[in-house]
Image (cartoon, rainbow, N blue to C red; front, side):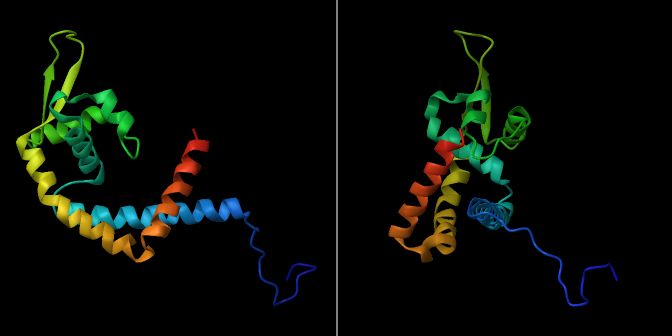
Length: 156
């Protein structure tokens, strides 16, 4: 036995600051919630990043977006948006075209099949979000949203 330690001594845990505790709690919560949504999306043949890209393109409307713009709007950064769009294009969910004004720009647009996939998922996703977070109540959710926005603004 090492000198100065009694047999019942437990290794000391580092004391986390309240900021560290909040950060870890936020990461653990985000991981758990994202994992649950990923499981649900997997049943529909999509990854969370594919679903996110489709939602972004639905929001962009018929004018579509360049890959770089999709990447900027993603919830989690994907270093290879081009490959992500390739996979969605192979499945018929998006299409790409070169712009007439600037031939260097390739615009991605959601297809009717992509729109239908999202339409089919809208209700199940809404219900899933309600199942995962509805117990917090509207007032607490609004408070949570404001706190998370404040944290993100400072992290820029």
